[in-house]
Image 1 (cartoon, one colour):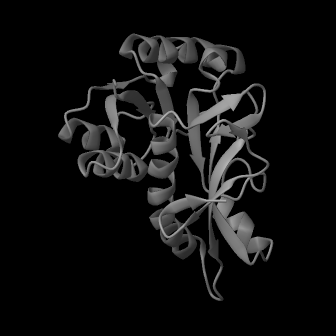
Image 2 (cartoon, rainbow, N blue to C red):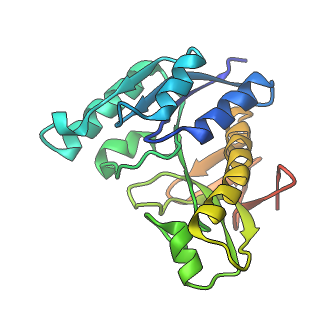
Length: 220
């Protein structure tokens, strides 16, 4: 059986990309990473990919007349790579809903909140300001709605007295680095799919809610 071909988009340091590379190299994730793209020439993710022998590309948004033009070229590159699945791992751009349509069901994103709470930016700050007892991360299918696609799985952590944004973000990262490979493994094993428009299907059965990360594994 051929391995799942995965492309990744990232705007920052690439810690979630590194988690995918590590899981692949450890034999825990049966994928081929075929392309890593970024909108930031100095993104750490590009260096990580280059060091791992993964092809990379950079697109400068300022070089395009419109956001849609940027997205058209972005997805042209992704199509050319032959990727089966696209992972958004800290890609800090809103994508054109029409342009991404052909990828719905083949595109996932990791977001640092317990969706549907705190879509968008500054999720750790917002959780702290709201006085939440719990925080977490979600992996969801990407649709035209910002951080609004069907949630596949989540990792929950408690918010501790005295936590600030940085402490909360750093503690959550450890769980993000388990959550994303675990979800991608289900896709690679052909166990996970999306029944349009918004039903997550696992092992042929529609899900009523997100899977939960427990001790590095996804459970009901």
